[in-house]
Length: 116
Image (cartoon, rainbow, N blue to C red):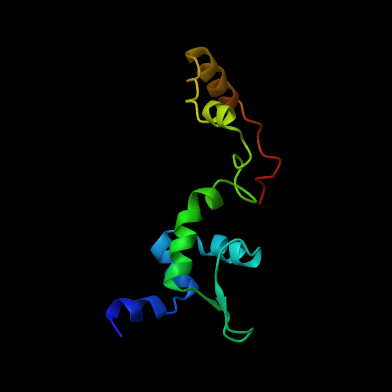
């Protein structure tokens, strides 16, 4: 067997996949529970593991998976809608920024008592 064949047969733990793909562990666990990503299972005792091909497929699906709950917020948009959704946002005016600053300057005081 060549090194490439051996690497293809290697079993990766979830912690390794998280590190390789730079994603939160909780997110990977959720995707596995929802059966949204490929994985291997060796019974309840051993948990799940991933092959190199599983990791490659997850990597290809990352933009879709990271887009939002259940396949991304923009998954069902038509081409014209995608262009509109991807359009750059308009910068808020100085007037709007000033009004926001005023709102944050006049926040309501906490109801907690400072008495000790």
